[in-house]
Image 1 (cartoon, rainbow, N blue to C red):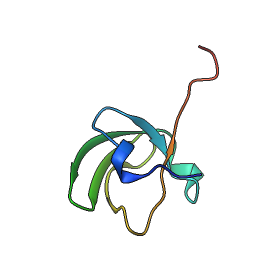
Image 2: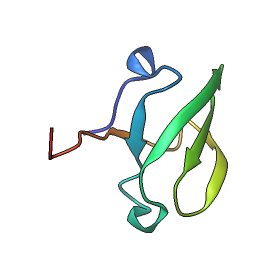
Image 3: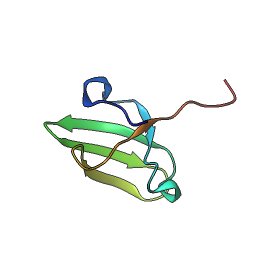
Length: 62
């Protein structure tokens, strides 16, 4: 399930479940409903939090 905007913060590692080929992303900034995420495979993307539900990424090796 995606994260509520209340829990998103810069630095959090996330993935977009509808775009798995983007890889893991790190939230750069959040301004109102615009979330800027730097994804490992496509670079920086600005997402509308009303349209995209991000999932927190947990490293399975830790």
